[in-house]
Image 1 (tube, rainbow, N blue to C red):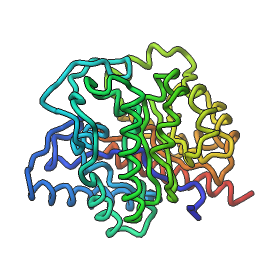
Image 2 (image 1 turned 30 degrees about the vertical axis):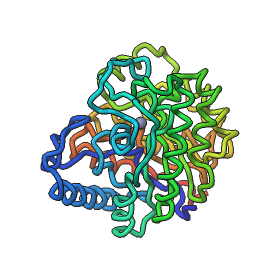
Image 3 (image 1 turned 180 degrees about the horizontal axis):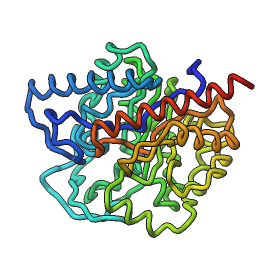
Length: 344
Ligand SMILES: [Zn+2]
């Protein structure tokens, strides 16, 4: 797909400008409404795109300037979910949150992100990637008093995601990414129906497809959880063999400063690996050499043409200065390795 060796990209969100929403915060409320909000989001998208281009990022995105949250904003556009009827549930077995309820059959009355994707497509000739939530992560963010079956609800969401993905493909999105942090937690379900639901979501797509599985944003609930995972994080050992056999093209994972053993990538042999070479849980900006070191280690287990340098996760909670520095480091680190490979 990409003629560039080691094409760089980000896992998803980038910081929002302070005039759009309160910065360095997740779920930050918008500062505008109606038509003004639409204009402001589009302006922010252009700023975010310009920053990615200036940093030399090869596969660009909207930086999630168009959404408040990676899962909820998509669900807000669906029928069958009542946002006023809230219940407290435990998310990814990690933290309690007040979430909306499924009260009837879920459906998508109209496109959710297609106009935003069209807007991004109209403003760049680079490859573009668009992120959607994965079915398992969606059900884990809701209380379901209607289907009363996680599998059934995930299947319904997979069908809805497939409709949205097909429309995104039609407006020129090159890579559609499904965010599935839940794949690092619910291993029995992953095996029973998680991969099948994800494959249902990508059914019939001709564009590239990716799944992003991470250890989350650098928020306290996640960093506390990571403390309990021991000296080697082997969660990917559950999902990678299943994904290697799946028809998903690209697997996006976290690596920089994480305790994931690099050789687990071997389990994905033949797939494209979008490798997190930037830590999003610290304000410390990596040096290009640190990024290059991570990529060099990964190249022991993945062919160069299948390695896509990326960030560990989204950078929405970081300051714009830090995020900009990290984008530059990613791009410069990849350039170091391209130079080494070219010299062989
Ligand atoms: Zn992530």
